[in-house]
Figure: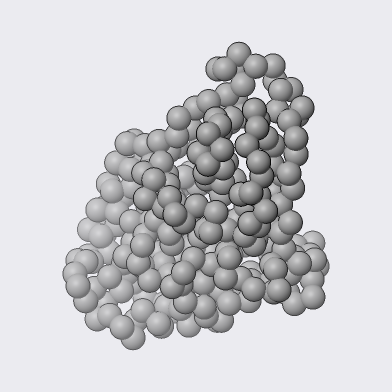
Length: 266
């Protein structure tokens, strides 16, 4: 999603077309106009012949990319995980990254069923908070050596306490790629619903309907927090200092990656 948004914005600025891979999953999920090499009658290797510009950092705004001179076409290599690339066009991006009707409809139906099951009524003082717990690859020794960290249970409990102290009643909805770990970590917590059986997109759509968000790491939870538009808490220790992953952040700063106003916690 980060890569597509960058592609869309840079194409808009340069008055070019954003070319997507054939059968891109994003086209099936969001209100994205599909433009492929086949659709514009270009050979499949056409993009490989374009001039290449590489991003200097993976999680930092690289202003040099926006100053690339316009041409008949251009190719970029990177992750483009900074809101600064597209913040001036945020409303347009929100319109584009709107889930298609079947996914939105299922998410609203699921949320209604969850509220009924948990006997929870959302009000000004009773709120829904989504929790995204990413482990999987992030919990492996390989990723730790690279410098990617994932929160332990203490972070989630602190984050949950943040909301419990501010609202009369809170319903937490958890989505995770390691539900067994999540249930064990939050075993002593109450008013928690664990979302299972959804696709990744369906989980994102459901969790984004919450009033507020507790993120873990990675961009999946990032987009949930951005879509929800409420208070978002994020894990302060995103990278291991001195690691290879730390080098993806210019001057060890996360400000280009973390959306303005989000709250760090550990």
